Length: 299
Ligand SMILES: [Fe+2]
Ligand SMILES: [Fe+2]
Image (cartoon, rainbow, N blue to C red; front, side):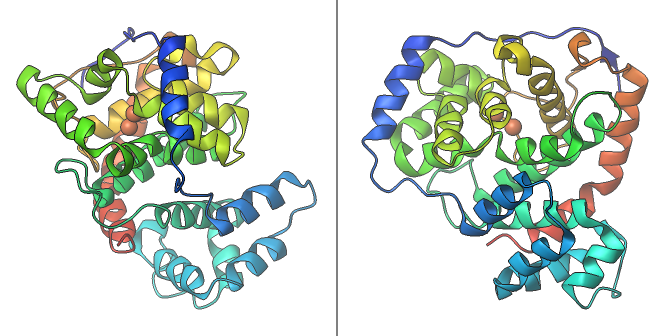
């Protein structure tokens, strides 16, 4: 894999943000934040949150609890057959890992089934999101001053606007896909030119859901991280994680993006190309297990 120190981005227009917000405000049935996700995120804001609180949240949702156990026993988490209870999962996998499973599982339940747009399937989009979350966490654990766990959540959320686009603006989304196929260009680029961007939609939804400023900022700027101000470093990390997943063809693959594309390491992250290579190899080794482990739990 050839890795260079350079990157290019697109700017975002304030006028577009306002126009998209106005359209989204008219939608009456935008999904609300998954109940379990809200409970986990709000309880985790409290300094005294313990494994006990997390276990209680999981136990109140039996379907979620069963999924947590299935994932915990999958090869991806290396505890095959040993996890028969939630507290055992916390002991073997650790509090942070179980928390991430719960965040991932409750999020993937927010949008599932047929999204009605060929080329944007829910399962592929979610596997991409899990891949980006995993890669962002791996990158985050190799640099100072960032929270790898928050990066995992941010990676999961980064493309959430795509689900809303498919469900609420299906005709425009289909048209954009056709334009991209003709021009062989990435979907985000065509969205920006057209004035309907999954990044802006994702940021709107993340705001409605009361998610953190950093996560909102990453949803908005993950394709043009330079514009993210004080959150630029985090946005660059998710941007790079996104590139790595496309390169490895982990989950949904954008139009006009080939696996031969060179990965550009943004200087702003402060990570060496060698460390990025290490992450790429680690991610590649987990690819099949992410696809099978998480893929089997997404409807
Ligand atoms: Fe995106
Ligand atoms: Fe993405």
